[in-house]
Length: 150
Image (cartoon, rainbow, N blue to C red; front, side, top):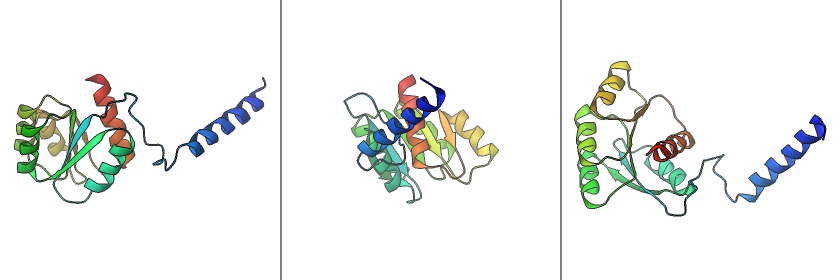
């Protein structure tokens, strides 16, 4: 098979796979296992929760969105979770409380964080920190990577 024929074949295969996926969410990665894993999304600012929950659900995870830090700790007390996403400006005390409440991976999203905020979050127990504009697909990919390691 020549290189040109290979790339033509690969292109047809790629497009057929993308067409066969109904409503694909722009290449959102998916969970391979059959059992959906619960992911707690702590939405502190009321913006990214819905889009993030939709991307998590499309990837085979089971998102639960709560608003505020008190609701997050209450939700962790009621049910177990595979991972926690904190979306918005949080103080290190919240990260420490979440780390004490669960051994699950903790991902923080703060579009306005500075270097000191990131370092404080890591010192408080955050496993990954994303700042700046981040797509929901990247967040899902990072959560799936954390779940594979755990």
